[in-house]
Amino acid sequence: MMKTILAGVLLGLALGAPVHAQTVNAGTYNVEGTNLDGSAYSGTATITLTSETTCAIEWNTGAVTSNGICMLYDNAFAAAYVLEDAVGLIVYEVKADGSLEGAWTISGKDGSGSETLTPQ
Image: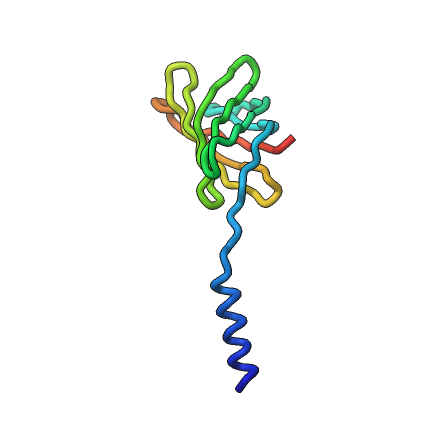
């Protein structure tokens, strides 16, 4: 009987323990992605933390630089940005190794591209 109670208490503690949310670190990341037409691109992205859950992000891919704001929510990391005269949105999944894998789109365009950020 005592073993059953102890097992129940331990199970309750394990289920009630907080799950550690993923985090995104400030710094420079290598960028590998695909454009809306499927062509590949690469470059770097720099993330600057502005609070525990928000940040600024700058991508440099070839001759293109774009800036945005970003937010971490659990294991989702989202960024909104301006690219020329359009607004873009990307949603990443934060991976255990610190990399970010996501999909993006731009207002007024069909489809989505993909992108992976890997910490340098």
